[in-house]
Image (cartoon, rainbow, N blue to C red):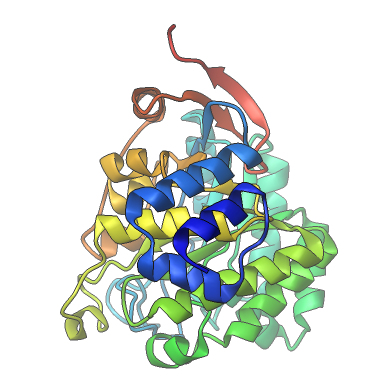
Length: 362
């Protein structure tokens, strides 16, 4: 099927196959992808509106046993700079974020075998009880797997205890690229594709909602990208537990993997992946553009390549900062960027409920 025929198929709202997705990735002109993705975007979200969330992304520990080749953030226990934040410090941090307008805490850390499961449970319980204006969006799939190993509990039991403590959503981190060929090379201790999907499947079955992510721009090829999109599309068909897809490019500075690569992901590749994701993930309600990881201008352009969400304000972020990559913004600038792209802006919750609307001046 040629590109024109695929455009016709998509206009009819039909699902494309992995083979067709790969053909679009390899052969479709970028602006044709933009047109197809824009059509899909307005089928899912007809309003001329782009959302964002006021959030922050602190970390409770940087001690990690997974030794991922793409990570500049982690430290080993006892190493200079290694830390575990006391619970009282985390709650103070959350209160400060709430005072600055944050409604979501996106919390992740290293897989630290010295932390007790009680630490995680108390952190959730105290957040819900002491900072009720904050939604705890805590713990990626690898962290859940680490808790399971630590406690000798099943993933299901870990998730159930966290649910009972008050957790309702999970961030989609730790997926990288859902291809075991790639995972064996960049994160062999972090688990397989099936492991990540199994945690998300069980979480969605239980009632959790989550995002799905992808980090590209390293050792993956087109087939790996399509395999990733197909895996999360199939899982979404089961429980519809994903709220959004969030891709970002690998940041190589200060990482072991970065020392071996001679290339970096380009802005065009990012726009290509955003557009393909909107086309391929026909059961995902939202595609998130990343002003943070790709730069504000590329994030803005991505709003014309299928994205309908502008991510979060990220009052604090440490993982990309460790790789010498740091962008900052605020609510006012988010609104201005969205308006300049031709859309109305709206602040949302973690679950995409609209809190405040900021229409453009007519």
